[in-house]
Image (tube, rainbow, N blue to C red):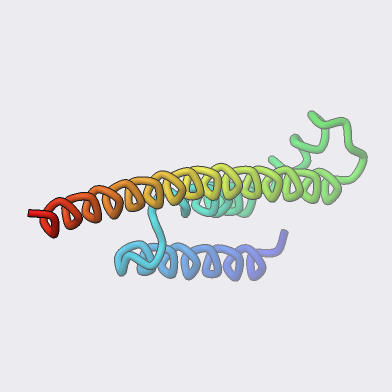
Amino acid sequence: MELRLQVIILLACLASLLVYGEAVRREKLMLRITFPWLFCLLVTVLLTLFPAFIDGLAFLLGVASPMNAVFFCAVLFLVMVGFFNYVTMSKLRQQTVRTVQELALLEYSLRQQNKRGDKE
């Protein structure tokens, strides 16, 4: 890999890290949600600094072309992110259902108290 390309990739990773950090700082993103992307940045930096790892990865996976190994890892990463988002969405849905149920119980309780107050 050429030095110029390595510098461009490292600068792009640094810019991405700054964008993620600023979004977390301003509370536009939760830190927990940025972990997969931070992991991806770390792997990208490592592969940029040590391009021989790509060849070793291809050998370990039994893939003829190192680029195929990179694409395979990218697909696995996207599947992982999709699963991570699905888990988060499921938790949020459960919390929403629970909050709606609690609100309904509170409204019911308030109506019952208002009815008792009107009778007295």
